[in-house]
Image (cartoon, rainbow, N blue to C red; front, side, top):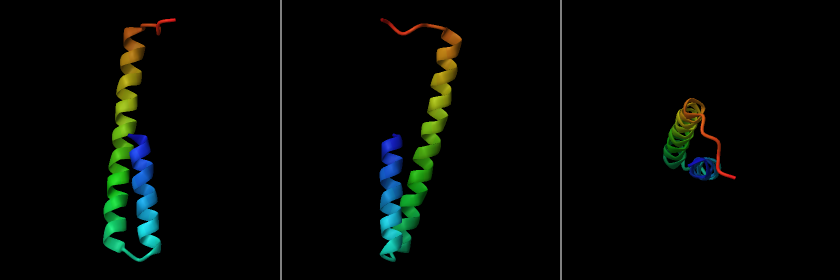
Length: 58
């Protein structure tokens, strides 16, 4: 998911350089959305792992 956010960010930067404002804005919005979704899921899974206290298998 973080990889998709970075891809959309690169698309937004390239579109902005070439003057495609609408595409750049849309790609930026998608990149920001995916980034925050990644952060939220990361925090949820980190808390779930801390609460369960299970160790990974060797």
